[in-house]
Image 1 (cartoon, rainbow, N blue to C red):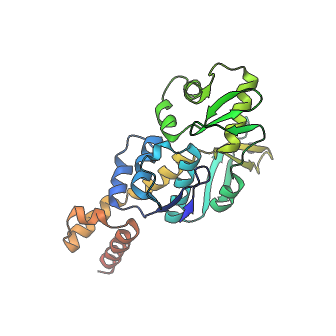
Image 2 (image 1 turned 135 degrees about the vertical axis):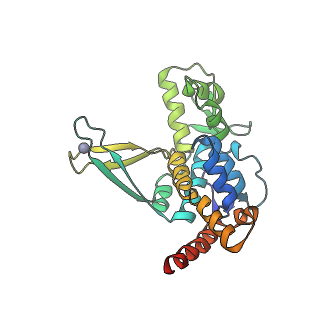
Image 3 (image 1 turned 45 degrees about the vertical axis):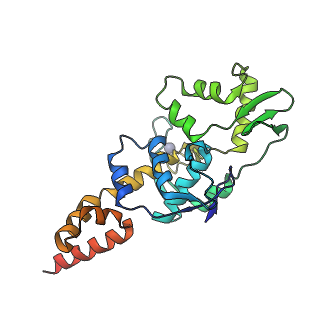
Length: 256
Ligand SMILES: [Zn+2]
């Protein structure tokens, strides 16, 4: 059990089965829509209160994915990105612990921001500007639009027409209340540049899960062939158990 940082909800996750693997493999893209479909299958709220995961903030959805990643693959994320400095392009190794990453991005209520009577809405006290935190459903809805940020502002800020200065204040308040996980700090060992690296939690975790899901076809084939289990029964097994059986069969086959 763990708590989501923004909503405070207590949540449990179950391990993915072959049914989620099929979902990952057949989805058109590793995006918010897929993240929501996956989470709504694997997560449950301890008090049973959440049925619409799309209403959660993007921060909470990202945390659900990171917690899922932690359970399936462990706490340490290792990846590498190309150095963006012109004429460098060296691969930069990035490695961090999910637990530390989450602790570093704990939400806080900034000064001058009040909660309003309207559920989910806040007010910048001095300017009287109202805003709410973008939900995962908002993010899914604006993805692919020509100006996704403008549409998010139209949905989440009142009035939506603001000067760049006030908009920056609203965005700063949103980021404090629901921190974004989209940046990592790194250093290029080649050119010594200190870098702010873009990191897309949803894409990263969904791709990792999808890559692992690709073993599904081989697993189903082996278990159906040697144990004569039906496909639907195999799909219901947790992924780790299905892989154990399949590995045993592969080992045995190698011995003969
Ligand atoms: Zn570099």
